Length: 225
View 1: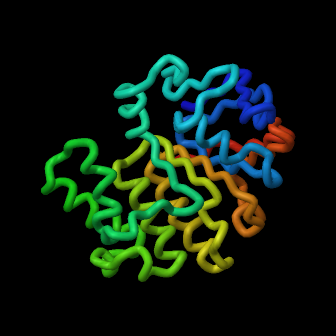
View 2: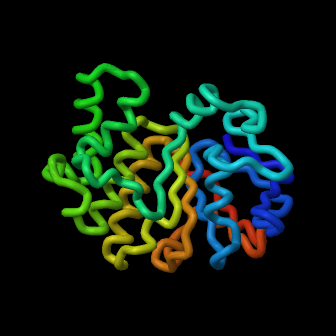
């Protein structure tokens, strides 16, 4: 589903990713870890199409990201959910509005958008917080809003950048349980993290980055959704 071929990325003179070769299978759950500055966030942003590589290329469902832009790239991104490290919630919109906006941009009917948004907020345990505003929520609740916004469009791929970076161990376990439920629906998930709580008790595939290269790829069989 996701294929990276000799992928490199520079910011100015700094080589952030160097000659990455990677394949992630459909339905796989993958952790990407490594020290700060190893290239975890950059790797996710390249897969999402938010950054362009210095060299090499990426295939998403056999589509070469180097060869598409504009409306075609936007259509592909609709199949990819992205959970940002800093949530990126809109403070002047309610929880419901923050999630619904991901569907509104696709031009779907308002009745369907309302139904799907309600369903997704129930899934993440926020049905009673629909009319609340982000700044009135706890960090864990804000993270669940961000997850709901990313999954409301039923993405084929879910990318998460340090999704539990600011959460305590108990909330980290809750978020991990939510990811497992999403994965069971068949979604391919890639999580960039340095969290020991997430990595310490998992048999999911783990890719370790160091100095912009794949230091180790600890693979496991694909779990059936």
